[in-house]
Image (cartoon, rainbow, N blue to C red; front, side, top):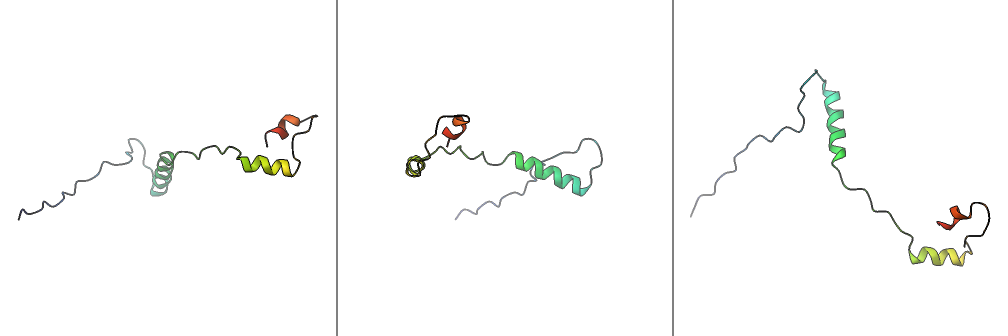
Length: 76
């Protein structure tokens, strides 16, 4: 039987590197939180009205009526 090689613990590259100044622990924590939040998930897709939405509007007789502001009501 061939002995399995043990994984070598190599230090990971640092996430941040301070090149100027002396930030305290709270400042580093805040900066790390901001940097990590920037690389998060993509924004949720824009939801388009479903057929059910339009059927419901028709049942409630919410069709846009002509007049001032009709363009706002037509969006749904």
